[in-house]
Image (tube, rainbow, N blue to C red; front, side):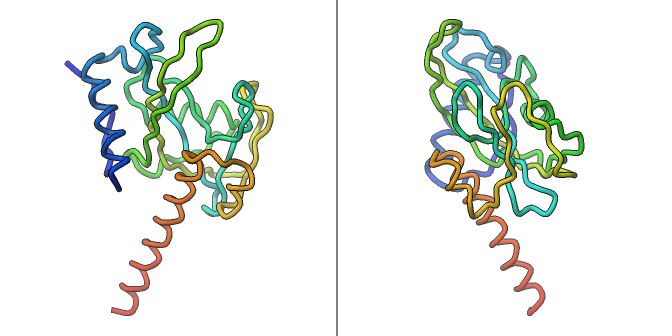
Length: 189
């Protein structure tokens, strides 16, 4: 029986394509899709779109191995509850204990290739991203990062041009705008 990767409300054609690819991968490999089995060509990973307590900033990591600014996240290591794996990774990589998962629903999906290295062949990461909020700002840099930074949403593009990270920023801003419009409509109606 195939493992279910979670719930995701797609926003566009790209989302629908990526979600279909993820579902097919999980159906084909079952529980192994959440492992680090190098023979199946990839694995599901979990990431955190970690917002500051006031929601105005996103915590980015300057990833030690990849030498770029990214969201926090990592391997599921056999955990099929990807939201919990993403939460675990966010805590480990930031040193923050008070992180809240804002929704169990997948916020974004990104499928990308990881180049071959001395330990494993090239493979795909089927990365599920979840929206989270930190209870405090006092992070600690882990061995996986060169640095961490709370970055105002409007300035994320100064740290990275990675389309997948910019898409996360844009989705947070779009959701914030939709929420404000809904609130205004409710208040004036």
